[in-house]
Amino acid sequence: MRDLTYYLHIPYLIVKDLRGELSEEERLTLEQWLDEREDNRQLFEKIHHQKDTRQRDRIIKKLHKKFAWQRVDRATGGKRLWITCGIRYAAAVVFVISSIFFVIYLLPEKSSREIPLHSEAGINPGSIKAELILADGQHLPLDGKEGNSILSDQDGVTIRKENEGIRYESKNSDGEIAYHELRVPRGGEFPLVLEDGTEVYFNSETKFRYPVKFEESERRVFLEGEAYFKVKRDERPFSVEMGGNRIEVLGTEFNARFYPDEDKQMTTLVSGKVKFISGKDESLELSPGEQAILTSKGKLIRKSVDVNLYTAWKDGNFVFRKQRLEEVLNTLARWYDVNVFYEDVSRKEVEFTGNIKRFERFEEILYLLRMTGDTDFEVKGKNIFVKCK
Image (cartoon, rainbow, N blue to C red; front, side):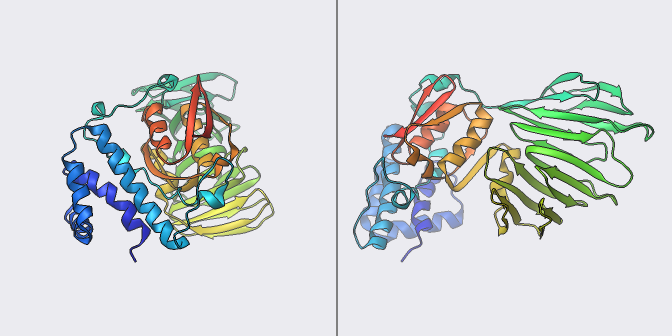
């Protein structure tokens, strides 16, 4: 029996074939599927000869659902489990397998895809922006305009506007060490280079407190939100404090996430080695490709993960793999600066898989989400109401 991922991958390959982007390996996989049954080839020809792009869209979507249902039929002995507004995750599993890969790559020209536009047309993706609070209380607004200028020259450091972010340059090590705070709002992201050369990229709704220059014995910073660190190797240990817990490193790349409204903290290691230490002095030392999760109940867990799922945001993408819709929408809400309300709480448990460009228009994001099953979205200003279709 073919693995489920094989069948869910076929619509994606058909779309790549429509765009002339198939690799030799992918073409071989598609040909194998075409040779399995005559009706496979007939459906493929029907899609190829369909000039109405919306009709082509519907055909591929039905094909994708068909594969998912065939797999469910085999697993349940032909007894289908139907989804209703009152059914939670256990029953919802029969349709949450659906993927949106085929939608992302669907058409060579976006203008040919007709998308129903509602009031969400006024909701825009985030941008590079932040607010820097200096030690004397001065607030400096920051944006993504490129340039090379001096923003501040005090507290023993020079702050330069460099490219789209800012960089700290230490002038001397005398005097009391001052602290600055960077605040990245909802709908924002921002890059920063610390005085030691450590690069940090911040996600939306994040606060970061740090010394303008580090002490001789340690490098300690404070994070609330999400950030990607590329720590400059140094004899002094580098530590990130998050809600009473901390991450200790020497030189490495990792992603740290701590939002007070979420039920867990996560540290995902890309390269090097880090140690996650909880407030209870329990610790985990991570290797590349591993993640430390601290639950709201204080349990510390180690997982092996695909790091791209947790770091793609800094490269302009959202990558979701079987994630609850509530988690997906929380992530999107921070970036698009919207509020999410559930008219049907069972929708929180729907799982979603897909790749989304971080700078897509919000109406396109909802277009993709609406295609995943029985979930619909109503937009009123910056409020998103989630309900069952």
